[in-house]
Amino acid sequence: MKMIVAIIKPFKLDDVREALSELGVHGMTATEVKGFGRQKGHTELYRGAEYVVDFLPKVKIEVAVAADMADRTIEAITNAANTGKIGDGKIFVMPLEQVVRIRTGETGPEAL
Picture 1 (cartoon, rainbow, N blue to C red):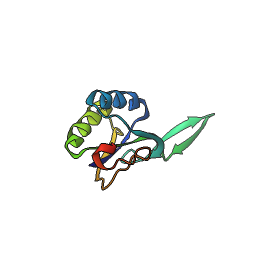
Picture 2 (picture 1 turned 45 degrees about the horizontal axis):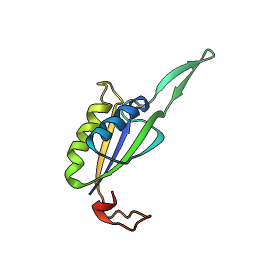
Picture 3 (picture 1 turned 90 degrees about the horizontal axis):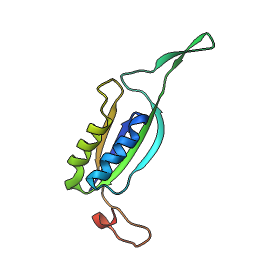
Picture 4 (picture 1 turned 120 degrees about the vertical axis):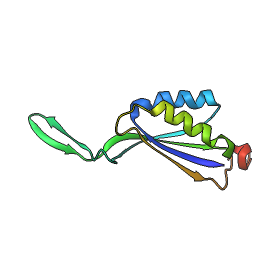
């Protein structure tokens, strides 16, 4: 099993959710986060004063999938979240040792 964590632009969340649904991924967690990478923030003008916005709004998506679904899941996220512009985000893939469905006590891939 793999835990896939993707940091994407907020307006791409619905596209990614739809792509994952079409793939057969049944669950995900989305969290509003702030951060920066190579963009290093930007400046904005408010009431005539310029100020620096260090952290940009992003969405963090977490998806647990069976190991054989990882590559297809990564490809679906990449295609759905891609705008071709800086700040599209990153995908991190980590091994997932154990999953337990609290309601039934199922463990492993059956719990996904």
